[in-house]
Length: 108
Image 1 (tube, rainbow, N blue to C red):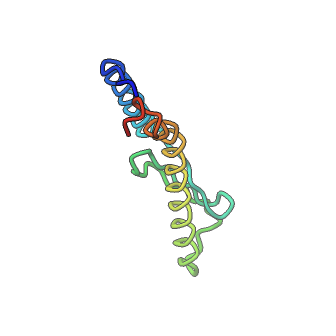
Image 2 (cartoon, rainbow, N blue to C red):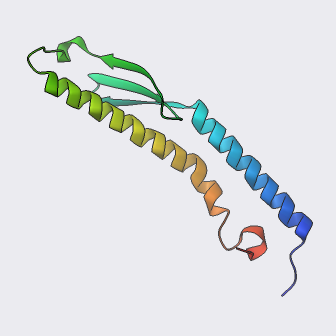
């Protein structure tokens, strides 16, 4: 078995690190919209998990039924969180495959 070229391995590792950092930054700069009740409640969440906007359709506001509104807000937040997770998986997934057995000359 031949020894892998260390310079090539270092270069590959640096490229992978740069791609990983770029993907992480792209996720942080992204935002998604979660919704519930067929769009009656919408939440905008950024890639870092912060909420920047909550929109509630007036038809859903019933002082006699606060529980439903709370459930819709919770559902919209969960939907937004799921979408941020999927975005991260899409951006990071291909990069994590680079760490398989063929990565870096099979050293890992």
